[in-house]
Image (cartoon, rainbow, N blue to C red; front, side):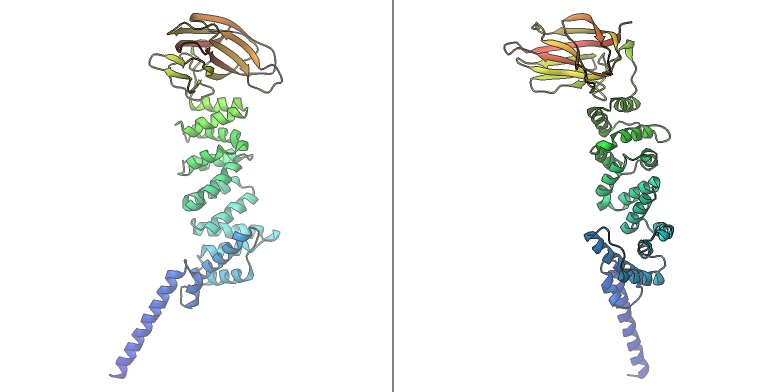
Length: 402
């Protein structure tokens, strides 16, 4: 074998080993960056950045307040020299600048890293935290959104943070542009915000803003009904009614202050529409085809069959109803009550009257006082020895007496 051939085989073998080692380094620069660095073969920039990031992430998982140490900063600098587009290296450089004088420089570096990648969790977290410190809610929420879109494992934690932050001043304006395009995590956000009582009012304002131009998100979701309900539960009646009427405008039919008092539609937003009982011995349903409310009760049944919140000012009103039943009703078996639902310190019960069969009306006087929100209920109380009964109401209205 000639010297030329031997030299050729040696060169080929060396190239093969080099390619193999380089391939090994490339395959491990993300999963095992320290192994990739140990080969001493290029490319080492990404591996150095990932090694620094892994070290920093491991320490930060144990203590959220730790900063970038000298070893991680050296690896990040080596990475930047070898690969100027290594976003993690730039982010680690930024995080190492903690003094007040370095704040603007840090922000510039983090923003630069954000332009290079949107898939680095470290970069995303750094931008969110930096934007929050600068009180830049628009940028903070926008990057939370990007993190939730690109890092599915972080969606729940960031969704909870965004739901809690909805309570802050300025959050409505900042979140409108983020939620306006209906990102795929928006359903998760609305579910999570229901668990944040401090955010209820701003969440309702945000939902109203999204229902208007240019976003026009007017479709009614289950979380919309839930938000109206929880607002009412915490006494935010005005905000709850505004949200309900924005998503489903209500026409006052024949001066009737009660929503759907002629039973032509399924309830939309209880308690500002009919809240129907579903008890085992007492139930209510709306037959919108025949425009009637049907109440079914068995012997011994007692409780509220239907109820609705209504805003009333002091003065005189007229309560009208049209009712039939399939069997004679015991005296006071069905009655109407109007009860104050606000914490005013006044007597809660403002009005009560039995309801008789036929087309009838009674006068109602709402007393002077601070209360403005009242709950109208139709109650059933059947004796234990009474027959079961089906009651049909085709009209229930509450109108100003004038």
